Image: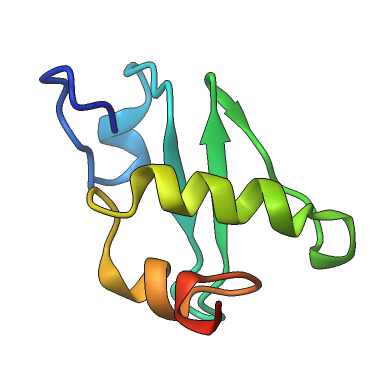
Length: 82
């Protein structure tokens, strides 16, 4: 999800298996929760352990590259409520 010309992936796990994702988001279609990928680390924490400030900063940094549903309606944090 960098503006340096790298591709944005929205594919199945099998297709992404051999790709190194530096920064990105995992989205649960069932509950609407999103989980950041930062420096190739998947941050899969329960809501009570997530840092709102860090998550809002992540959304702000990538808001033009993320789907509007995550930016404005994603759980547990989004930019639509601030």
